Length: 293
Image (tube, rainbow, N blue to C red; front, top):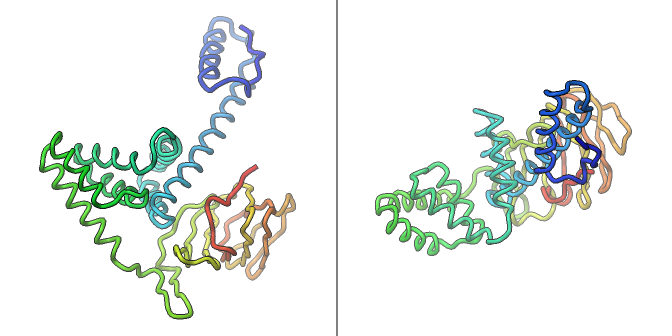
């Protein structure tokens, strides 16, 4: 069988078909097909695609739930089943919610009708929160519930409206995580729920819609971060605990408590080791300004 076509020129479906054919040939004539290296390349390509879907999905959930809401969703799923959390973000967030064809508001209204009809109240609450951020008005959601009542029964629509009332009450309750004052803002970092990030977990302070100045993050680095850079953000790292390295444009710089680093836009960087740091982002952190080579 001819396997000389470069992997990069194949579609995912062609790669799968070719891999199946190669395995069949190998079982018939062991040793004649150079499958091992090609199979490794295929798996690397699939992993890169999966990583890209995950990052895209996480960014999409941030748009629809906000950083705090997306972080809570990921933490809740990851604490029970990390593999399921990865599938939700990669498939539901990275491949379904990012599709074109219909706008996010329409996609949200479709989702809440289906979930209300099925009685899936946990997912319904989440999707009601997303629908409001995706531009759906309360009146439009209520109108959609008439469709649910007609085709799935009035009790299903009634339960969904109760869940909507719960979401609206929570939305209108002032947050205790950050208290805006006349000339300053307070954030209690140890009360802010941790959110997953490429290098571990972060608690983001001052991540407010009307804040255009800066954000402060306490980051617990538990895994080696992916090399990334920002086009607009300047970051200031202050090492609080632990020892390790920070890679800056390919150079590994040793760090220890009280080491401070200013990372300018365009600098490829990542943290290496088990560290706790404070990271100040100027202007405020933007998940859309995180770039990978």
